[in-house]
Length: 144
Image (cartoon, rainbow, N blue to C red; front, top):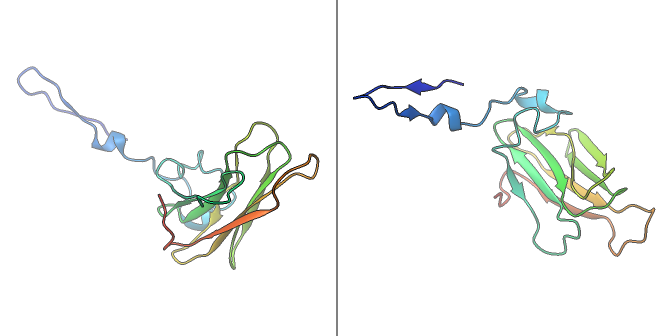
């Protein structure tokens, strides 16, 4: 990360364009598969697709084009619920919520053209008012 300082007339403005740029990923392309998005540098500039209706646990698909990776995340889950992501013709990842309400999967490789399916599966350990919920995403999806 480069930081440039210029001294002009006793004032030292700092140019921070390099400082504000997202961290480079440590795993471009297929090397991101199976890695955590935060530690790999792929989470900060990722975009999300979150279906607004009938989404019982706020399931979303996260995508980082720079990393060629997708992963799934739930925000209102309970311990024992599961979140999964599968790229058609590619890999899949899943995680069980151990505590708290948020959980994300590890990343799966998503090359330029992909279809990813993310699902939230309720735990069978406690009564739930919803059933398995899934959503699909592709590069043309309305990412935010």
